[in-house]
Image (tube, one colour):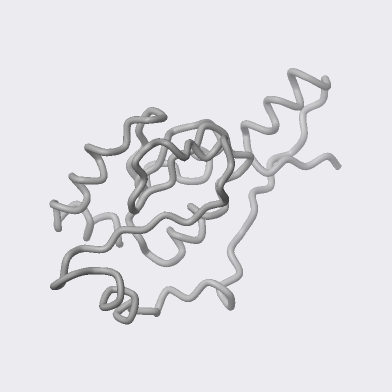
Length: 138
């Protein structure tokens, strides 16, 4: 059996190599991903006077669209799967991300998908809208 981790990879295999693998997405190891960490130490260390703290986690490489402002978001121009998004969702975190094909496969409607390089307005909306953030946390 031939396996792909996303519909985007399956499509690329079909177009480039002439075969259609079965899509079996990656999963999350809940022993390594801890949704119960409250983050208060990080908030005290990195935010001033109770300001909201937003975060991005990624390798520094060109496909990660480094020049785009990226607090509490992961802009990307290409992903094979989007594992970091899966981990964020497993922790119940609201996410804003670029709607590239493999990311759409992973996230669906569980986050805010925006065109590449257009994240700033959505980040500000997420930070200012408690109801939106709470709705995405659940």
